[in-house]
Image (cartoon, rainbow, N blue to C red; front, side, top):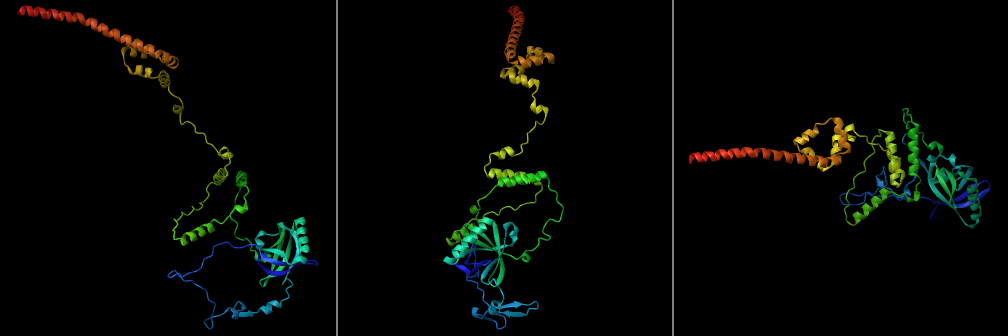
Length: 371
């Protein structure tokens, strides 16, 4: 990796020659500005406002703009003459616990590499001292024309330095917090803790930039002349009405996403109750009919005299028969009713025979008289 700064680490009387290397790099997709009519590049040109002409880099210098708009020229020689002891030195001023550094102050990150063989021993000494003390080094250094604050810590077997903002560069969060009093219940905190535990840990190396990947796929498709189908935009978050319900749903969804078998067990289950007594209990008549089966239904549908007589029973007599002996009694009743019907038919036929004989004798006598 190419170094961007050469200098030395200084703490006490120890000086360690080092090279400064960028520890991070941007992977975001960059775009160029073009003329939409013909696709030509749009470029910026540095033009002097006084003579309205483009100025080459060699003729461009620095200046400070005063409050009234006056430009005060500052040369590189002016900056080099400043009494800045950290021009080529990373000066460690203290060793403090990492918890004393506000993460809001952390800026860029760099690796410090030992510059030359003689620097290897003091470099390793500082590295191991930082490891054993579990502290970080707080240092001052100058880079790109300004003095900065830095934090030295160990990453694997390398000393890394994080650029820090000065304390007066971090803005106070005034007017950011909610301006209304809010009461948080213990039950809500318990659900929030459960959600945090359910989400669990994550492998940071597995995280990636989904938007960048989508942009790269879009560019590749455009280069091949393929038009991608537009994807629907994700639904935006709505206003939370029931915080407890939202937390419970989040915990349940997180468990299901992780394939946790306890997801269903932990989910609240509402037992459905019967709407009325009629839904849970059948009438005595329906119970008897169901127990008796098709034969009982057929018997009940026949309105014979015997059936009418049998139906004229008190409820006390009918209920036990329907409940206990409906299955056995139904065939016997059907046989009795059939026999009763047969006897009634034969008696009617017998009583009609004498009447038929008398009518026949009268007809015979009438025929003889006529002859």
